[in-house]
Image (cartoon, rainbow, N blue to C red; front, side, top):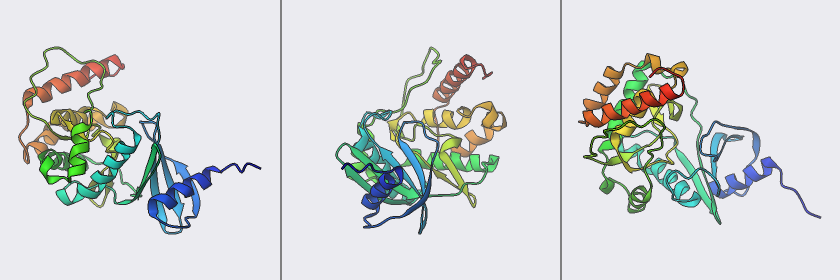
Length: 256
């Protein structure tokens, strides 16, 4: 007789593998918002709430690394970047099974994002862009250089300025990937982590939020200044990326 595994049982199995425990009891669980077709689930256990991110073939592989290598890259980022000045959720465990992988991280209860938090996010971004490959473990540096940087966007405009610099890039740096607690802005979702154009990230911070989610309230000059106080930037490339976003939002029916 074939025994059909329940959804709770499947989640408990991945948690056992990731956490290295013989028994994990999931009291309740709920799916979280995600964009890459990875399974992202908040699981309530007797030790508190944890977040399980499960990678399997068929997820939207922006970096072109595959499910296992992308999950591994994400785990290493969570382990290494906080010591380099980039806050992230605390990693709790990682496991692979064939062509699937999962990581477990702490749950952080977020507060509403304020203008001051967005300035802090700009400072965190400047610190990220100042990290060199030599600051990373050999494995993470390799995965970053093998990742395809995010450039997918509708509405690109002509006359792109030359790319004069590459840096470590988050790739999807806007409010949906920030959690705020006690004045600290921690950064989520590192699947796009790669070596790429740093001005892509800064433009994302300035322009990626739809108007209903806060783009009208972004003080672009203050955010740019918060970044520039820590790190110089290419004003021509930033201006071009902002024009691309304006074209994108106009195509979506929102005035850029």
